Length: 231
Image (tube, rainbow, N blue to C red; front, side, top):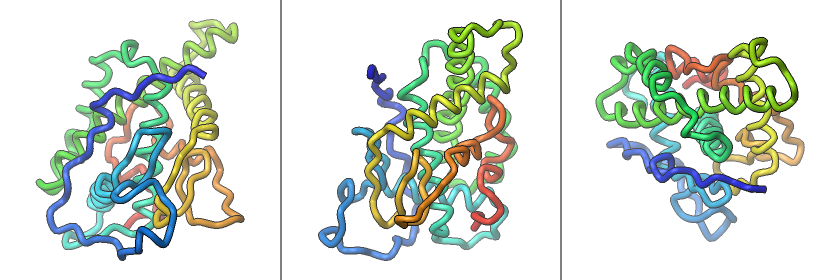
């Protein structure tokens, strides 16, 4: 299978949040995993633990939690890692050259109001994710449109929602066959969805749809979290 290399800018480490309380320390020699400081290795693309922690705190901030929170809940960290893995898988599939810069700019602008509510030390994390998320979502629409046209569907009958759904399906298929190595402290991953470690783990692949039901990011990133998983 031919795979695209994820652009370097999409592998960047997001800045550390000052005062972040470390998650309970587990001896690295006592468990297997992708390596020290790495939350997940997605076929060679690494997502750092600090990146996940920073993004989980951001999701908590946007979820309406009062100030003073220093550590995100485990479920928020799992959700943050799921979303980050989703971006990596998407960039492995989409053609970034086909992503309209104007559409990305518009999608980013839709989050301007939410950005104003973000603590100053989390703004860089917000900006980095919104940009990547927007490119991934718009790229999935184009990917889905191309796939449906190749299947013989009339281009004039392919709506954005239908194209996005097809793009999501293709990403879910890729995630299911992608080698994802997780730090056991985060749980385990099924088709790119991170959840509790269990031999009985059953996570609907459609959970990836929490990233939005349209080609645009939600008005507030906190909306990406189910109510039960907000901090």
